[in-house]
Length: 393
Image (cartoon, rainbow, N blue to C red; front, side):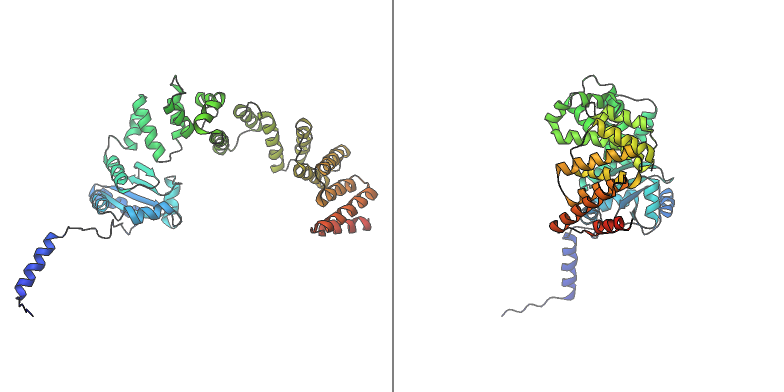
């Protein structure tokens, strides 16, 4: 066996040589976020002439966890961000994060915010970004001629050039900025050919004004959009525009909502508006207008849904005494039974008859409902209690 002896100096020399051959990784653990408040981060940003970067996350957000695990651990990301930003990580549902989320309208996660030392947003985006995309985003944030703040100033100065508007819209869209819809409406208003692939895509992604030229184009040319995106996607788009408009205008008068229905649904809008009126008066506890609207609605738009008819008959049996209204309720209950015989429908009929003062007929109908419930194996407690009440009267 061969034995070799080396001096301690030789080992130290070899160790130093090997170390020189290893790649230098000063951020083996990834990006180091400041353990500080946003206010303190802004102070540091002013002193160091940097922007503040906020990783706005929630604990339940899958893409947020992926960014933490796969992106912020990247050494290039860590190097660049630590050299150029004061980095803060905030949970938007805890502590200071709640106020930050409200202040900066953070509602998509993760949201990536770049602020100057005054707390003003210079650039932002949202959703998962891989290392390459995040570095590109950071470069844009640092560019005072290309970031969102810069583009906002250019737009305010009156620039409406097509190339610029599309660039601005793309940035706002990436940030999930609600203003993207307005910008898309403004851009498409000037376009002569709304049927181009680019404009159709903009319309489907961003347009949110039901009265805009572009949205009216979609309504009038729905087969064209259905061919490109499928029928369900177009239906969802129309519904989202309607619901979004109502959400942004919570104080719309009833007449305006009816006009909105007529605009979005030229063929079935009248019936939908009538049903909306019904729900509107119900929520307002306006019993007089609710009753009048219900009679009008089901007279003009007869229903073949037994559950719907039974529900209306039940409401009338509990809330109204007027003979004409109860006669209408009885007709609804009878139609529900003609469509489908169940113990619950007979129970509703019995309640209407009792309300009309026809106790004998109400009792026989309730007894029939009880027998049916027992045969169905259904809970007959309410029917039994109702019968007992009739006997005591």
